[in-house]
Length: 254
Ligand SMILES: Nc1ncnc2c1ncn2[C@@H]1O[C@H](COP(=O)(O)OP(=O)(O)OP(=O)(O)O)[C@@H](O)[C@H]1O
Image (cartoon, rainbow, N blue to C red; front, side, top):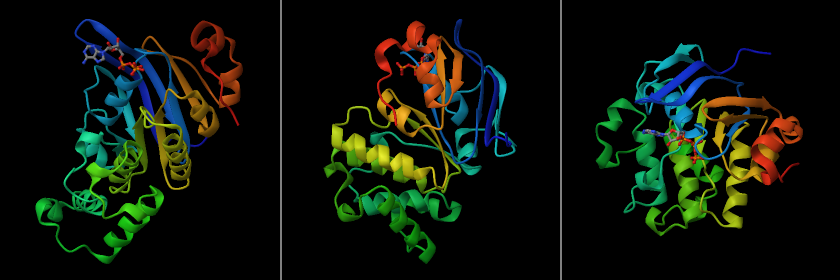
């Protein structure tokens, strides 16, 4: 197997005396969709937090694209190509879809970032990048609408677009379909699947239909550890996963 884009070794995270992650190993191959699933409290979000630098590691190492990022800040990890989808609350509600993306793109350029509120003139390649993101996230038609006027599903796609502005090599999506209706879920699923052409997706998702349909690899977590990892077919038929763990939750599939 080729060198992974992301390799986490023996990741331990303690919150005081509580051991949230007890030695997690994770290898994510480039240009794949790698999902992390497991019951509530298994440690999925904590794992994401440690990978993206939102919380510091207690022990272990994380190498991304050849860089040891174990002790780097979240911002430094963005600079080497790790992006995390923002929460809805980080959209600028009084700005349009286009202006939100414009600010996200300016924010990735040190000199322009200092003038974040001035919406300065963009270089042609930056304008092209906005158009490409608008197409990808399916919001070209509503580019002039205020982000606060978008549906929940559209706002979540815009969050993904904001993360794409940094031209990441990998994007971390934590429950991107939560709270969505069926149409929005389908749009998000198509968007995530399409991202795989250009970058690597690391996904936490409770909707098993989506996970089974679009993942290349699935890591199943339980009580702060990796229980099993494999392709969707293998995970679906894994007895440990089925009976001891997910029970009837696995219903989707290609
Ligand atoms: N800041 C914190 N302080 C103390 N304990 C925490 C903290 N954050 C998470 N935990 C605990 O760590 C464990 C793992 O939580 P985490 O949110 O990572 O699980 P999860 O698999 O993402 O769950 P869910 O599917 O419900 O989002 C839980 O028992 C949680 O209560």
